Length: 235
Image: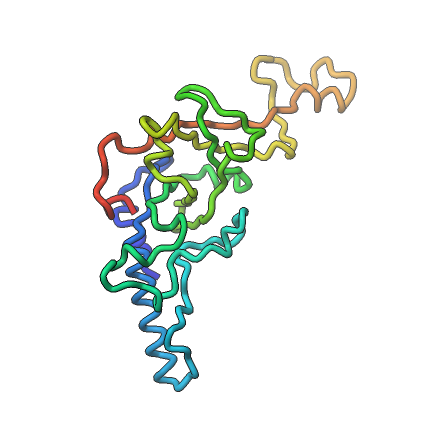
């Protein structure tokens, strides 16, 4: 209803660009506290038999369609367990307590290729990928969303510090990949002849014009600020 509060300044993001941001856990906890308080007030006013210790809404991010059990992972603990002395610091649950890296894409890329796979791969060093056959070296989004008309974002269970690398390790790469199981055809990039010239059959034309899937890989450090960002500025 109010996307300008989710990502202030979104209108200033240049077209056809990619950014790395981080979540703001304190904003998420404060938002959910307000939502739950207002919902409880409304239900009580309508004389709905509500458990006074219940927290009906515990997720902020849209985790539908994400793997790894993400859909069952609340962002906050039940509000009845919050300690006033801790403030919002004691509200978080699991990985949500840490600012997580978010990949934002603005432009027509995902409209033209809606089935593009977006994920992260651990770096073996700043220039090479770790072994992708090891599941621990690949991370998939735990939430995603869109800001119309042309912004998509994907959140990962990795902190911005770990993603950028440095003292904590070699970091992670972002990967955008065409689906490897889908066939795609196009003119031979280095052959000026028409695809049908000299071909003995349709199968030979198909073989000549079959294009392998494309994958783009970018290290997170190239998209993240080199100086620490104050909590809440990238949210």
